[in-house]
Amino acid sequence: MNPLLVFAISLLLPVIPAPKEARMSDRPFDRAHLNEIRYVKTGKLAEEGYELKIRRNGITIRYSTDAGRFYAEKTLGQLARGGEMHLGVIRDEPSGKDTGS
Image 1 (cartoon, rainbow, N blue to C red):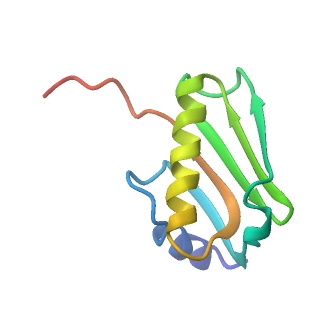
Image 2: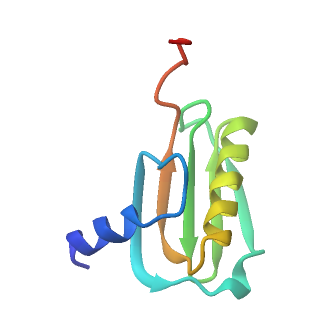
């Protein structure tokens, strides 16, 4: 797929705040599989990080802590409410501790 198209589609994600990485295709996700979510707990991600894989036959959420799972579910909820979903991978993690400034 054309990298510029991948980038353009990623910019259109209806997710706030924007994730650190989103590689989405132009192929739509069949919402009939929206409830087919597989959860994988792993120690290979940042403490509050997650990876959300949207595939033809379902969704996989990888996370290290409950906070990461929570953020992945929030992102998925925003995508589901935002209109047409596309196949792809979204990765995010905290950018740093809030300093209060």
